[in-house]
Length: 413
Ligand code: FAD
Image (spheres, rainbow, N blue to C red):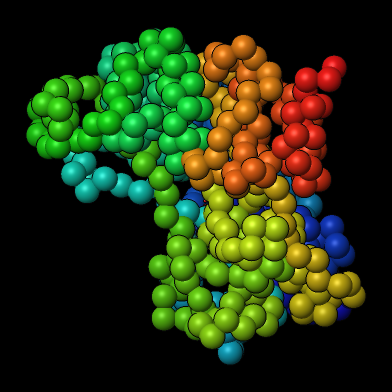
């Protein structure tokens, strides 16, 4: 391999770091620059709503690699530095300080940012949770807080509620939809997670939204649209994330709730053609899933890890550094969440419209496992405190087995 080629990776999160590691693992000896907006070495986000928030872990434990391991990879790390624009024709990336990086290959791995609720923006003791600094700020404020209002009943909101409740806070969790996790798990399983939260003392309020907000001294008072008033010490908003693509506006690239890619993670231009030598991975990438027959974007740890690797391999092939056929990236989606000591695992691209078929457990009290059916087809599985059963169910989802086959495997012991 030549050693005068240059690859720039934008985004120092999981997908970006995995891309760097893969480039080196595949024998790329050229220059690699990792541009990262955050000041920290690459770290992993899941503990931010779990062990790090509770105080069980110190920040160093969330580092993805030790300092020596990072050094051994031999790349230029541009921390606290943001990409501001890119010229695909000239193969040049511009940073926010005006400096320009030339590249032969570019990996876009800028992730996503937490969505804010306009009513709560800039109000005292209101926080979003996306970064290590967010988590440390919330943790510091938790020390003097007795009551917490969590806004949003998706995975992040439910985890924050579980973690803060587990360290003894009075927690109210507000979600406008009918149950928690409606969009991902649907009504029945969402209600099961809601039951877990209530059983552990979280005051879950579903079907209500924030109507108005007032300043109450150094705190923020919230009135819900059912008329109830909440006066918490701290408010944490977890209402989803938006992909970090602003820096690409004005570039000839296809943007649609993320950077649009083909099935090989190659970034597409506005006319739908791959931009030579440019790939994307992780939360920011919307790619063509051949198995799903549509473009998908997910905000899950395992995807960021696997796609960082896949995109880097595509890139090396694209710029002629690897002599291999391009391989479509098409994994089974997987996400986990930890709440009150229970591992919740979800396999498959679920949208809440699926019908759960319980194959383990008597009712929806953990532990249980449900196979998920859409239009008569097995499309996924959801397990709570059922790791081995989930692994078994996943094999059926991966192999495209029928619902009947999978059900039989759980009943014929
Ligand atoms: P990110 O981790 O967002 O990294 C992107 C990086 O790029 C960031 O550092 C960002 O600052 C930087 N960046 C953005 N714009 C620019 C720019 N213009 N120039 C330079 N750098 C830029 N998933 C699970 O499956 N299970 C879990 O339990 C789980 N828990 C989570 C808990 C929390 C609190 C959060 C926030 C996420 C959690 N996730 C979980 C999701 C998972 O962490 C993400 O899917 C994963 O971090 C995505 O990695 P990424 O590298 O694509 O993006």
